[in-house]
Image (cartoon, rainbow, N blue to C red; front, side, top):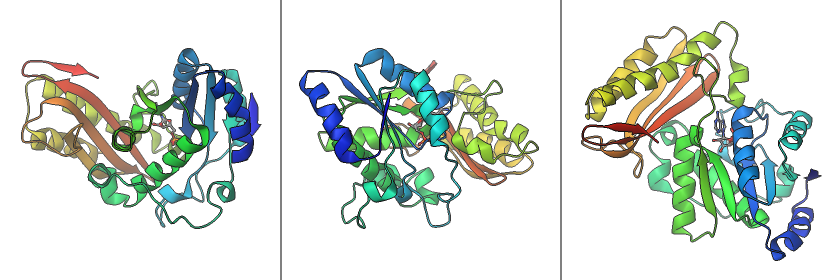
Length: 289
Ligand code: AMP
């Protein structure tokens, strides 16, 4: 694996590979890698000739009171993990390399960026869409891999790629969880040993929502309330939102039908955690997506 920090060096490395017809995959990350990220790298490795992983903690997607400064970073460990998983190129630019001057151009998908996490994180998805667009232009991958863990992010990126005719296949990889159901996240490091058991309430609440769907409930408010009650009753946990939404709008329909996401965000101690399940809801059946 080679490690590159400069955009020009990355372009020079990738150009002949692209010209000779190699299929190039991009796995964008903010580093502090875990098995969730590695599932993306493994999926990319299995289906492409060249795997590029980026590690960049993107200041543009953090709000002023968020955890940009203290976001965990360990590039050496990340590099070792990526190498073990067969990654070809690690792109780890500095903030100055990515943003040599204040940005004057942004990419926004407002309708999909304002619900769910957008309510507490205004500007977050604009930062994500903008940095992903930059990475797409820098790497020019054939395909890019994202985790379903960030379900709203996948929806925003898919819509951006479709609307702007970006010639890139977007692959969404299922959520990797701890044995007790907690979705793996770089932010789990913020949890103290006392807080850690309470963090499973997001997963438990999603399972409760799923059970309601499986028993025939189709009213988003009823599913929402059941999940919210469970999260709110957990000691040391503060609910941000619990929602049952259509995948195409990320807003609650009158009745749940078709591609549906149950999504939860909650604060556990100092950590803001998110989780979701995605299902296809039919009249008599519910299938996990
Ligand atoms: P991050 O470094 O948190 O920005 O995540 C980089 C990519 O890894 C995103 O596409 C995430 O959705 C994905 N990812 C993070 N955690 C998980 C997980 N537990 N399972 C699957 N994908 C994940």
